[in-house]
Image (tube, rainbow, N blue to C red):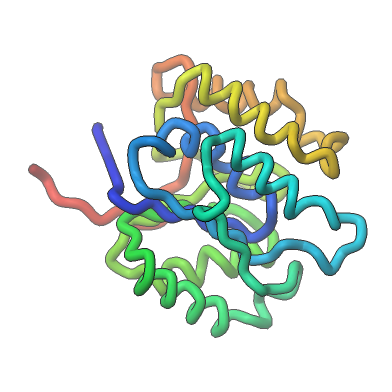
Length: 209
């Protein structure tokens, strides 16, 4: 199946989420379509994470995403459930201004309170638009990809290189290059191709032509 989006919106809760979930896909499509990457919290209230905002910019740059396509929201990490209405309105504004026709956000199988709140409000704000869920391995339970996107070995390597920009997280197991590659090899096996990124289907809107 060939699929496309004229304007593709990537939604993550925190710096690193989008790259972990869709870094190879972003590198694959960044020169093919218009994209926007929106992270709702910059984690700057935590002094131990003071570098992650700049690391996010550096990571996205490896994937080919320029700074004007990167947006940080004003929301506070770990308390997204208290800001549901504000997040909904933020997404509704994105819908009006960016007009996305394909959206990637957190999987429904993600148990992190911020991630799950984002997914719920995405489905409310972007009714009538295709929404696919990506896996952040450290907080997903029971994730299985029902939508597989073939990527190249170069895309895989760029994703690994992008994640390496996060010096703050370099000792975390989910930033391990072998783990990152093995996930995309597994998803590739499911798709019968060398490498793939996998998503769960939150909503697909289409027509047969």
